[in-house]
Image 1: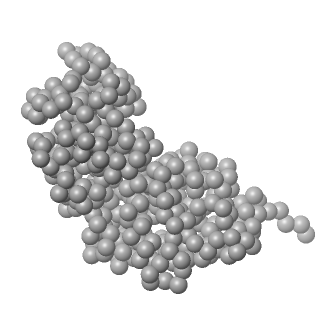
Image 2 (image 1 turned 180 degrees about the horizontal axis):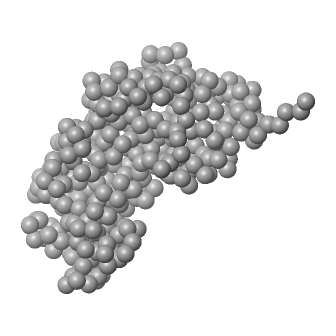
Image 3 (image 1 turned 135 degrees about the vertical axis):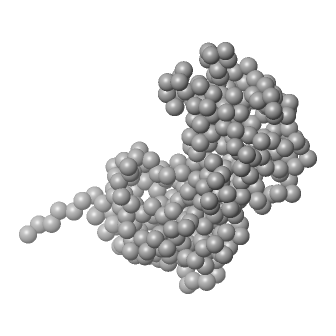
Length: 336
């Protein structure tokens, strides 16, 4: 009797035959937001287990997911870190390249904060303020016009009259996806622009006159830009801000101050879950992979009293369910 093997099965057989000789170290890439958390876990893992310390690289959420979807085998990464949820286009790419079973691991939450130089004025923002400040077109007298606003006071008379200069995450970052949805789209709707534009994606179009600047690097680059431009506003992850309170002052959003408590409660409006995605075909083949992901979501690491929480992670209230899913190797269900 002949047995037909799928491309995925052949790839899995190939990795099983070659992985020990080719690679004995877990390899991870992706989100710059997740990077410090994964690095903390990787270093602790290397110190406490009989496996090499995993290699953790950045590059952005989208880039990490794309890299994970390149295929199955020792020359491809095992895990993609992501500060936004995987897209159907990623899943389709994975399937095309024989990556058919993916585990989605939500390990906690983070907030997106808006911060400026600690010696500057304080800000109390709404999503509408940000839309009026950096959108390509805004509503004036009931009509869409090219954005004329030059200062934050032009966007909202209650804000300081500082010149608008915003450093926001570039489009490859998971943070940008959340920023687009929870800030720009919300502000677009609040100002009436959405009704005139007719499409949420049109709300993402930004001015191109230099007052809104995409940052393709990580938050350290944004911090450096603020250091050189004392009146600018930067977009950061909550944990990064909490580790730089000697340099930054954080703004409220809808009158809520971002904190571990307000993110955990859902009160702070601009928060997001953090994920990593595991190529299930590599489990049991790449040494230490299962042990690493078990360790990552353990109470000792991702629990409310663990080192990730000390760095700024908001622990997931449903962490126990995640631990069970990881232990069972349950692949993610189709996206809704």
